[in-house]
Image 1 (cartoon, rainbow over the protein chains, first blue to last red):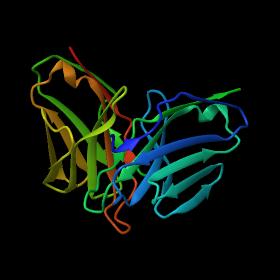
Image 2 (cartoon, chains in turn orange, brown):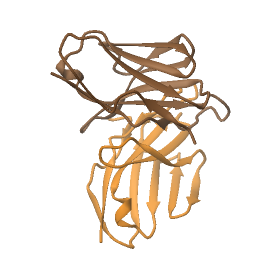
Image 3 (tube, one colour):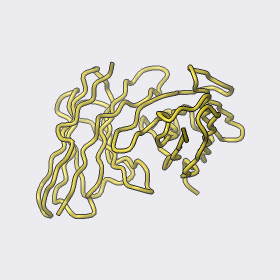
Length: 112
Length: 115
């Protein structure tokens, strides 16, 4: 079992729809969770961070965390073609290790 | 804004060469990281450093070493480059403060080809 798992996709949604991206993690001691967006040929760009159970909203993005079920998700409302990218879920496994563990990413395609 | 600068966007080297990848950050971050990214394998941690002259192995340190002589600069060294080290290399930095798990900020990446 991978430490951080994401469906590789592609996830295809029509423009204006809600895109839902999911991530599960194996280490129950994980403390912090991040979503990065990566355009083809570019480096990852942080879009959301979440530390406690529940929802966190930032503009069109909502991150959801459920530590009991060990999953974190990202919702993108009113999806735009410019949202087409690979979305990486990253988890900090415990407070002693400063590095993040990344999932392999989900490729999102927003169809105009 | 955090600025993480990697010295080269593209680099072509030959097998057996010693290769240096440089990374500089301007935000006085304590932590710096080197990852490589390969299709289907995602981002994998090679080494990280949490202070000057301090380093810790990541998940795939074999064939690599690092140097951190100044806080702002973190170098990745391929001691004797091999073709299986052809990859995208990403440098990142993060502050080391409460909450202890701060997000990492990435440089633009170096696409390294070993021929």
